Length: 169
Image 1 (tube, rainbow, N blue to C red):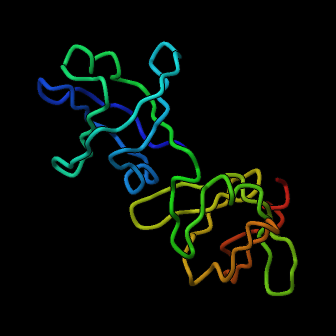
Image 2 (image 1 turned 30 degrees about the horizontal axis):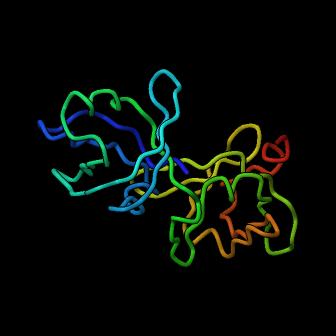
Image 3 (image 1 turned 30 degrees about the vertical axis):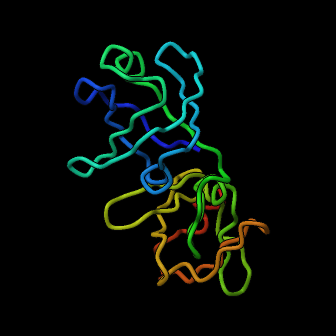
């Protein structure tokens, strides 16, 4: 799972500023093993020694990275964690689990397939079909998600999703 990207060095002791993904912001913690892919594509296994927040952003110290020079080599690296390290609350889902789900109405008619999930400040949005029609991922519209069956039961207002466009997926 994408946990974020190393954005820069913080201070002289090897701490790193991390632009965390939504998952990484909640899941990253001291003692956790992460996989880094450096700017040149080289993979590297790291363990988080310490994590603290500064101005709303995680600052991470990794084992074996003890000064700014060593930390500089990690700037630009992407960080990944194991899926099992992420604790989801009820009604939380991984984006990749929603992609490929069929949107169905109360009559079980297929309205389209989720092709992507976008994250906006107000809410997350399901993109449906080839034209990527936007369906807000809110309780008012999404009634039930079954990722195992790859189905999302929705109740949409008229005109929100043109089924003829969504079926082009």
